[in-house]
Length: 285
Image (tube, rainbow, N blue to C red):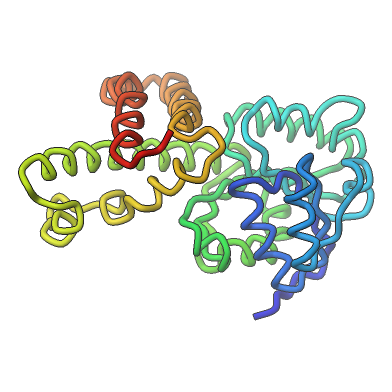
């Protein structure tokens, strides 16, 4: 189904997550311009109907809504701030959508800098499996001012369909995503341990998924999704460092509101071991 997006969209960062999202956007007939330092990723998107920007400046100058999906806070700050950043190149009336999972403070800092130029900012990090990414069914956690969310709603619907959830003000989308990720990591590592015990007792992982009820979880039923990330990610088994980054950010949010999270602390300590054990079992280097 073709979209009803009327504005020109720019997408910055077309890696593991952003590449699939941008592919879905392009295939829906949206006027999409992409920018990434990886020319192969750009070529793939051009083959799906997107336009390539030769520079960050050219992308910003030729679109209305700018979506950023880079890896971490440092990359968001690099892309957005400074004399050669999105805010400097931007113009009044544009909207920046931060799709990266970063600290709420990082999103708010972009919002403050952009507001001085009349540029709106919302945060809209996403969660979901591969087919949801390619089909536009990701969960989208949105935070920001109502007027900017309303403006971006058509393109957010292309990305998330009926799974676009407005959480609150700018930064709240990031808080919701960080909490969601932290819960997933708990379930995932718990499921891995359960599978390890089950295998040692002669019960296969597939049989375990079939028999559990009260102990069931999304992470158990979608072990292949989390395993697949390790298989395809350039960091391999060491991609747990990204998970730890999200957990540290979630921990900082909890600390800011005066909430102790001792279970989160234990999980962070054990996470590298869990990833390495699972990678050994799967033969992932």
